Length: 570
Image (cartoon, rainbow, N blue to C red; front, side, top):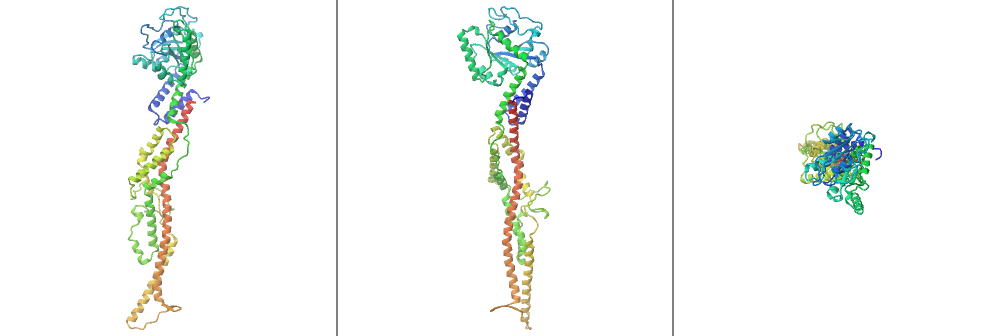
């Protein structure tokens, strides 16, 4: 990404790790924290010095090469058992170097003279094998721009663990890495697999030196050089500069010194090293995150809501709503002489502790305005089978939403929906959602009132007819004069009016009660469907808060982490 500074890359990496801290491998989080601290210290310290390190295996000739570059026998060289136990620093440019070396933790230091303006005379270098080796100064005092600190590191394959750890520590801190290999061990798997192969992002701050080429014939040198380039290409380091050098004869030392001087003069190695470290770690974050954007579609919550509604007892509540509606309709429109029997039946909703205290001024299905202390309902608790279906539905939704995410993010989403406090509170939240939803209204339909009035009128007619017949029967029993009641004549049929009133009022009342019951059944089923819809809305709200929102948060964190890592990589 053109135009992204090292500081911006570092900030993006820190943000990516901070967002994905709970998901990232612990090693990546710790490495990011260490890099942030290390980069901050390095960029605040001397920008006038470039720190270069000679790293390599035992016997590769690092110390001899340092002496050849410095033109002085500064590093001890043991011909019988060549080994470096502690880092040695050769410093060009005094100002600012002390703090930088303190941060590097290098105690052994050699300061080159500031007024060294000429090359040292040629001659055999002390500590090297016999032979005429030109003494090439590391720098030319103030006329050579840029300070330089050249470190001779302990051997990375030392038998002493503390030596190896010190070498690895300094390799992680220096600005420019110079890997010194020799013809005998240049193909050693340890240096390639443990070190070089993991430094793909550091190709711009790396040099490879094939030392001791004076021991080879021209043909052998060309073959070793070509084979080393091949191995570097397999390590992902194709194009890294390889220099053929002989510390004993001085061959190639000028080219190496020029490369070091060029890095010191440009003063970009420190930032380039930090940038390479950031890119390397950001790619590890990318590997843990996957690409930006999940792909695919957001899964439907319908099956999830259906399973949660079943666990919340919504079907039982809907059936109770239907039963309560029928019961209230019968109490309002039934035949008055038998209407009182319905009052002996329990209200299904009241048995569930639902439908109580709902104001008639609220619309059907509205949530109660304040539900801080809602009493638990008596809706039957979900059994093992229903709970299993709920868990399966939650898992299916979570897996569908995170289908294209790496496993760590999928597990994070599952943890938020299955093992968190919110997940444990899901049953109570469903119960509160059911109890907090007004599933039935106290408002009576107008037709109930009309039918109720008609029922009482019909009962009055029937009672009047019975009383009339009773009076006539009494007069006849007392042998008193009886006035013939009027009759309803219809052809050959003649029915006395009292009898017609008593029988007709009763029959019509019973028929009207039957018709009202049929109509009430239709209304009860409609009311149950409305209650189911409103309860599902309440359950969907719970699903949104306890399942969908946590999954969405994980998805958003993933995308934010992936975007930040991509910005850090550039």
